[in-house]
Length: 388
Image 1 (cartoon, one colour):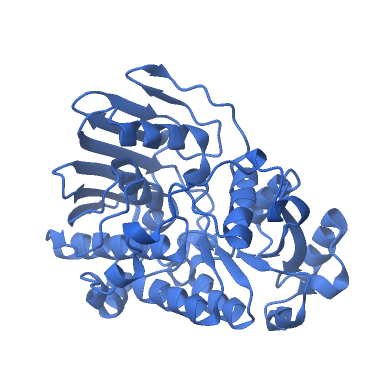
Image 2 (tube, helix red, strand yellow):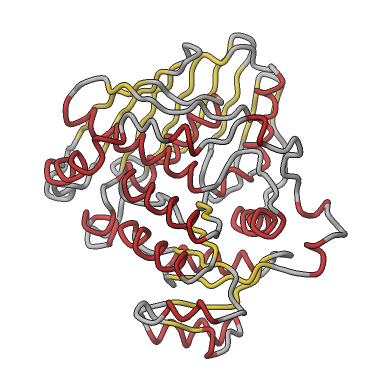
């Protein structure tokens, strides 16, 4: 991890305090009272006769999952493709009926600027490519949907936020769980005081990684190991389950297989957050253990548990009041329909999915790596998350 951490320390140290983030966080008075409701409840208005025209960038396995899910979308449609592999473009063209004029490679996709068939680009490429590709999409005047993590450090994330703001386009991050019904039900219950004062959150995120030659095991492309891939779920989940921003972080790394997990690729990291209310979080991120997909929220009047908590579903949840019974809907279908509402109507989700949200997670991940490297508690100056 030393090479990755030394590199990020130089780039990210100024962001551990990040006082400028307060400027990125809207005041409560600036937020419309109306929260995001399922698009199925809207039968009239602007969204009834239009849809978000999306180009998919990076035609890998997760992009395939998104594309299949989008076939059931009511408000989002695949109208463009961007790939460095000509054979994939031909296969996807035929499958999703995308014309030649809407297909691009990584060298020429800036030409989307002049293509009225594309409103937004969903970037689903290796982590290290998100930053340069987002800057190019923004410069082309198209909205950006970027898969998480949005960047490999906070410095890049902030540049992405700034670029999209200057270009007048939206930057959204692929936080599909922010639209998942069981997750939103627990957030609603927490807001209503069903759990009393939240005291503790536990997030377990992990699986045994497969092919050691995949891009996720290459620090130049991934920016890290398990933390950047699966650990971000617990980082983000701690924030939306407790409804606060952490004030400090501590972290410890365990590496049992240094041959498989080369320098710059973390295998297992345990990390802890402390929050303004006094609540604490204890989380685990790993590439070395299966069956780790659990969130647990404890309050002085009740609890909530989700297991699985962030997988592709169905998500299972229960509280001290009993089981949650929301039917499973493919997460990416809901995500893309709801993001269409955000981009085309300016609607506000219950839990943010914008670039500022992604930036906060990157600040925290940088701080986790710093805590591992130094063995110190890292104090954070972050804006408190808006109540959700």
